[in-house]
Length: 436
Ligand SMILES: [Zn+2]
Image 1 (cartoon, rainbow, N blue to C red):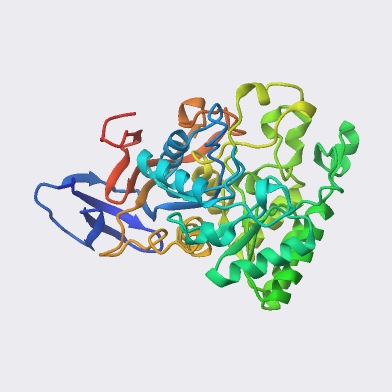
Image 2 (cartoon, rainbow, N blue to C red):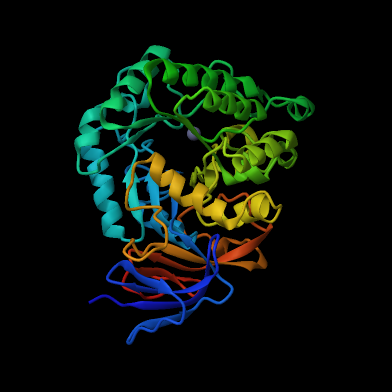
């Protein structure tokens, strides 16, 4: 018999305060003035109840790069950030391009027990862009893969991209493209523009992203398949997606929290924590991706949580790795960038950080609303405090966060995964319910 909870007075996104009883892994009842004998009572007055967050784009680094992160440590970072499902990108070692590797990742996620770890399969063998991986075998495996990506690399060959789009149709899969023309970005160190010219760093032009997105929406239209665009970062990319959706192309797009908040101006300090792929862009791009998210052109926020060991980030700019950790900070950054600025409601946040990513990844049991009979996976979030983000907020293995020493609003007070508390009153628990 698992522990049951009575949540008192949480404000449901888009609704009024309510009580909620959580029992046997499910939301058992919602309403007002509920009582439940023997239940642990959680005073949630002033807290917002959001369905458990779903991240369509996480790098968990296991197997192969356990010095940066493991499925266990990444799962803990996810729970601390209010997540209950993460999709794990396949750029591991070995690459997740077979049924064997994705089933291993699924099992490690189950053993960790903090969140549902849903493997993403590679599009091509070894992510080399040459031959299609065993997409059908991964789809039919116990991991039930529906999202395929060579993230970290672009599926650059248009014929391979076309074949992947055609193949995944048979099991309602989607190809998630990392849109980056490798020729146009050879040696690129930051966004191409006036700042890169001033700093003398090789530029990463917006067109390197936009030209691939334009090609791929046309390919997706041509073969009648589903395309997802990873970490869109430029105003022009938003325009292309807006055009494609108007045309009826079956395309979805994501933006990261850092592209919603941070701009290329930060590169001037040469702090490699701000080095990321795609790069931080201009202020007008930041505004355009916020507007694209607000008007529904961009469907979801995904973290692109990318842990790296200290030595990959404390070196000089040119030698540093691309990527930022983001699971623990995502909700707070989204609050600052688009909620506190009046562009998104909490109801919208529930959609772009939970319901929509689960739907794109075809997971029926994730991102579900807080209603009786649904999974007891949710987070209770306090939007009121404003605190300096610090290393103590990071619960994964790496500390390459761009937000350290920056003030961010909000705090995840509780996270529940299938009826079990993983974060209780602001403290991460181990899965036996003890403070971790
Ligand atoms: Zn990527």
